[in-house]
Every structure is written in C-alpha cells, then in structure tokens.
Length: 88
Length: 140
Image 1 (tube, helix red, strand yellow):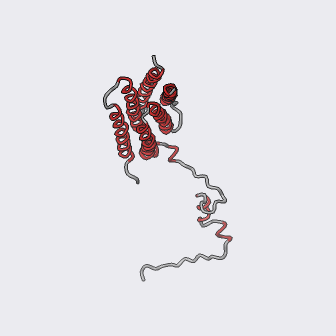
Image 2 (cartoon, one colour):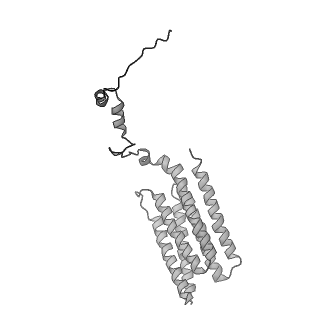
Image 3 (cartoon, rainbow over the protein chains, first blue to last red):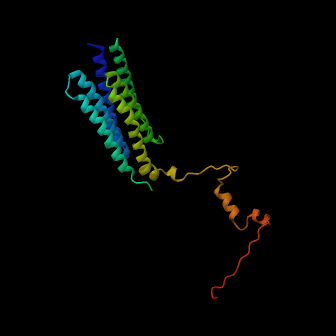
C-alpha cells in the first residue's frame, strides 16, 4: 500500500479524534465553547472531505469543502456577534 | 519524491491534530481562563489543517483558511469576554490598580481622599490659599 494513502488515512483518523474532542468540549457550560466546538467540527469535516475526495474520487469535493469553510466562518462570526451584543 | 514530502507533511499535521485534541479535553477544572486557552489550542488545530491542505495541493483553500481562522478565534474570544467573562469573573470585578507614588498623572485613591479631606496636613501647611464661606440668605 502506498505511503501517501496510509498517511491520508492517519490524518482522517486524527480528524475524527479531533471531532470527538470538539464534541466533548462543546458540552462545557459556556456558550462560547459550543460555538468553538461546532467551528472545529465543521473545519475538521472540510479537511476530511478534501482527503476522502482525493481517495475515492468524489465529485465536487473541493467546492463542498470551500463552502463548508467559508459558511462555517460566516456562521461563527454571526453567532459571535449576536452573543457579544452591542457595545455599552 | 514528492509523495514522501506530502506524506511527511500529512503525518506532521496528524500528530499536531492529535496533540491539540488531547489538549482540548485535558485542561483541568482549576485552570484559569480555560476558554481562552482552548481557543489558543484551536489555533494549533487550524495550523495543522493548513499544513494538511498544503500537502494535498489545495493552496487556495489553505490561503483562505489561513486568513479566516484568526477572525473566527478573535470573534469567539471577544464574544466570551463581552458577555460571559466580564460579568461572571469575580477576579475581574475587583481589580486593584497598582499605581506608583511617582506617577505624574495617576494617584492612588486613598492619597487623593486624604488630600481632599478638611483635616489634611497639606492644606493646613499651605497658607497661600484662604477659604472663605459666604452665607447666602435665600430670603433676599
């Protein structure tokens, strides 16, 4: 088996571990931790989709990954602005 | 040759991702500023993802992620600071400002109160000023 394929699978496994850790972290009591955890899960899924798209020849995987990164960013910023409220 | 470079970069990013995952869940209960520490750890994860994207040849995505990730971290930290940390952290509410004696503009609160009080020794010693009180009759 090619060493590149093995290292790609290692990264996917690491990303799955990171997603589980992020889900655990998002269950802490602070609202910001939920925001942080969801942001991590979205970004980890985008990178995992990049890797799996190359391995399994998925269609449009780059576009879906770009959309996930960009709209995950927009959603995180929007929720953070709502959470922060107005300046006093 | 380039396959080896790609796989080394991917393995480096996998190691960094696992380290950040361990750090994210292993912060103790008594750690101060836990949320900020976790945001800092997520910065490490972001860099690992950027390394993985570069290894996969997705340079545009890596550049976009490199630009957007600090904004996300700052937005979350700012929201936490404004609505949760500043209102709930008791240590932040009782901040004691340590002002030196020789500071030209800032003076300690006790020193100013002592100066403004009527029995201040400095007011007594300073004879250049005299204080007069006018009695105003409101009936006039």
